[in-house]
Length: 106
Image 1: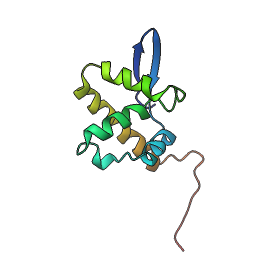
Image 2: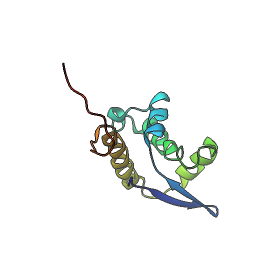
Image 3: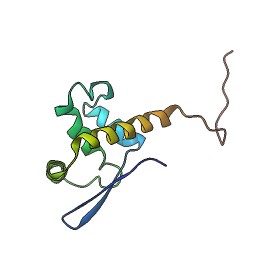
């Protein structure tokens, strides 16, 4: 199971996580995992917003920005988000024998 972050803000509970579709949408909006540590002012807010895409996709960006600005321990948040993104990227290439199609070079 993928990691999740839970946040309660103004009486609303949010379950934040990534899936392949949310990462793909982030990349279309300019997110780059390789630039995450080089451009934190750009990438961290985008990565945080991406956490909402799976379970809270209709939440307005302005509300996500308010939540982000009120968060404590952003340094630790960066570490957790990085782990979550890597976990999602790794799921793209993970192998499982169940139901997979075999392929071969001819």
